[in-house]
Length: 277
Image (tube, rainbow, N blue to C red; front, side):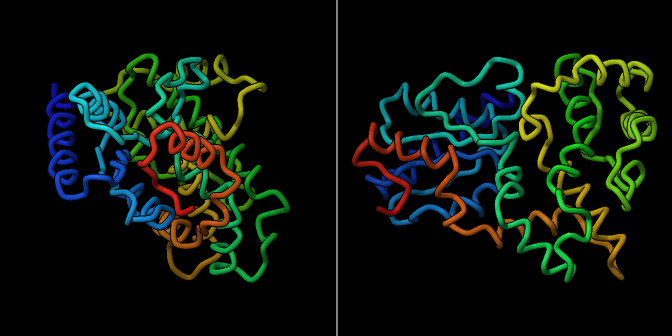
C-alpha cells in the first residue's frame, strides 16, 4: 500500500513540474544517488530527474502517468536480479542498467582507476585484476541476497560489516564468517547459517554474469575494506561511491548499453530527449 501511495505522490510531483517544463522529459530513478549521477550525464535543459526511492514506486508512477496520458516519461532503474531470474522488464519506457545496479556501471568503467590513484600510487596494489577480485569476493553475498529475495528471509544486508569476513590482503570472502554476520545482524530472520551456505552453493552458476550477481554496494564495501587496510584512517563505502560518481565521465557512458537504450527511447519519443545531440 505504501508503494502505491508513494507512486501516486511521485506522479503528482511530475505533473506539477511538467506544468512548468512542458517539453522536458521526466526521468524517474530509484534514489538520490542516482539523481546526482544522471544530472551529470543528462542535459538539464532537456529533462528533469525525480527520485522515486524504490524501484516499484518508480514503475508505479510511470504507469500512472502513462495511463493519464502524460507523455515523455521514462524510468531508469537497476536491473538487480531480473535477468538472472529470467524476468526482465518488458516495457519500452523502463530502461535498466548494464550491471546489477548503477554502482556496477561506475566500477566497470575507468572511474575505478581514477579513484584508486587518489588512494594509492600503485594501480596494481591489489593485483592485476581488481575488478575480478571484487566480483569473486562479493559473489556469495550476491547469491545470499538472491536467496533472501526468493525465500523472504529478511536478512539485514544494510548492517553487514564487510571487514568481519573480507580479507584485506587478498579480498577473499570467508563464507562461514559471512553467514555468521548475516545471522548476527538479522534479528528478524530465522534461517540458520548452514541453510544459507546450502542456498549459496545451490544458486552458484558459472554461466551467470558476475556483474549481474554482485550488488554495487557490496563491491564498494569490499573495496573500502581493502583501502582502509592501506590507509591511516578508515575508508567508507559511501565515500568510495561518491568518489566514483565524481570520477565518472560522460565519455565513459558512451559505450554503455544503457546509453544505447536511452538513444532508442529518444527516437521513439521525440521531441522528448535527455542527451545532448
